[in-house]
Length: 396
Ligand SMILES: C[S@@+](CC[C@H](N)C(=O)[O-])C[C@H]1O[C@@H](n2cnc3c(N)ncnc32)[C@H](O)[C@@H]1O
Image (cartoon, rainbow, N blue to C red):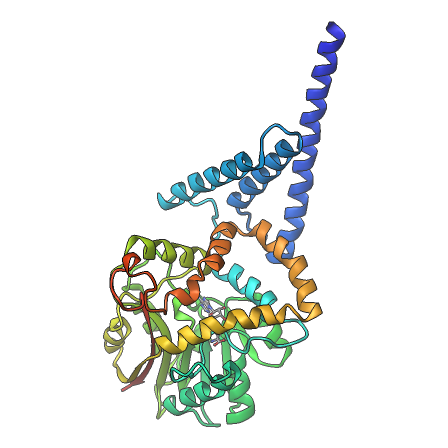
């Protein structure tokens, strides 16, 4: 009897030791992955709890203590509890990673290491025509930006949020601009472009170095301002954005133009639309100005007047639908496929919002926001939930 009890105790003891060793191995793997993702190793407690939980339920399922459905339910319930805490301001990710994480995903999936699949991270100039190949819409947009920005070979140009530098390539190769600077928040993009010889500063717009003040004839923000604010910030913070842009413009320049392409809110949302917006925010981070006049009104405080405003929502919708084809097409290229197969589990285990990312793919949230409502009962009115605007400002 005593022996049986001892054996049972030993078994439990070994079970706990085994479990702790799995956990330690998991922590080491996460730490190594974290090194790959973030040299500063900002730890996400959300990821640790989630991965630990997933490991626990996998072990419980393997040992036939619970079934798979219960396991999924447990993970979902804990995720929901974490989200509720988050909503009340208790964030388990002290360093908000969303924007950087998103670009790591997309730099892997969209921009193959060997073959360029996506040329830009924002829409081209489709002029509402889906029959044009997406690659043939980019140059016309850059031409539009240069015409509106009065950019010539002698201009000095700052692109805030330069992505993988497709517009910088156009400035250098086609316009023959010599004085161009790009800003990005993504270390991968900075490395990629610096290796190509560009002057790229790894910085958030909010921490721009003063050495950039009073230097530029034209400033371009092509699809980047959507990332600048947090969901809890309000429109007032765009004052600071315009203040920084204003300071970077060269006071003696003859042109002093600012081009912004940006998604805007323009109406209220139904509950289903709020759910989609939640997925958007958790996947990409950021916020949109609350109406299509937000920037126009704030710009006036800095003596910048609106020269042109075009609604390009349909262009963005066409592009957003087409990128899925491009992403999947990219996976046919062996290197991209292999890199993605290795990288996706790494991203998933280090991404606090992996559930939302998967759901956002399922619900096609990115293109949904530019589309006319498909189910009228689930929408506030018959317009798309957001408008995408191309704006041109001139500083007097
Ligand atoms: C949608 S991409 C657009 C990139 C590029 N303009 C293009 O057309 O491909 C947004 C860019 O904004 C940058 N970005 C995001 N948040 C930023 C911030 N707070 N400050 C500066 N750049 C930021 C990202 O690193 C990324 O390069």
